[in-house]
Length: 226
Image 1: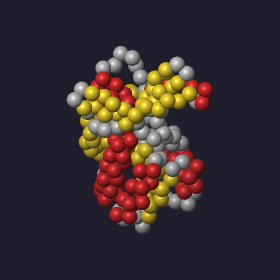
Image 2: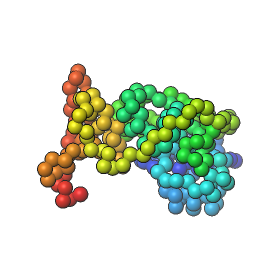
Image 3: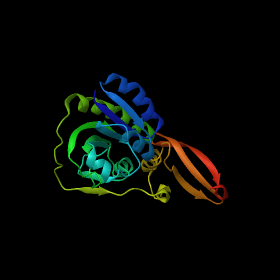
Image 4: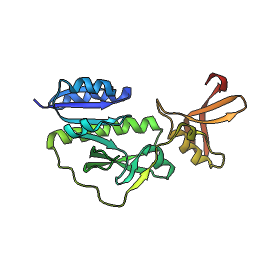
């Protein structure tokens, strides 16, 4: 029986693993940190290691020994690099593709197994959950068919990973752009959009934009408590 490892963070990824891995043949293991990945690999010989949502650089020793597959939310080579969802929304994209690609030393430079369309409506957490669910459709296809990865074609466009201080709301945005800015940062583990107001930081989430009107939840945090 072939072995497979899923390396991911986030409760939604754990929940999906528990439900979806039961439907696909093979012996499945889940890890959520580099340390747990090392422990599992000490006693495993996986056909694939899938990385639906990972925050760490995977060492060359693992990339060279195992077939590692990541899922990147752009039509590579467009959008290689960090913070793909945020960079796509800032550029006005309403749709993208989820790309399954073979991981190699270069960031998002590896050959592509498949691409599936995905829409970018809703807040960041909703989009990440949607992408995680779609990644399992792709994982199932890969296990069943073991497709050959093909080299990327086109001129690369590189995205830069966003820094926490870049979550401060710019003052010159129109309402719809403010909505996009808030929703693209609205996910567990991400720094919410914020503004400084005297001794407070105001953090925004759960934005809604209807009929030209914007509403959102706001949290007042004393700066001395940060």
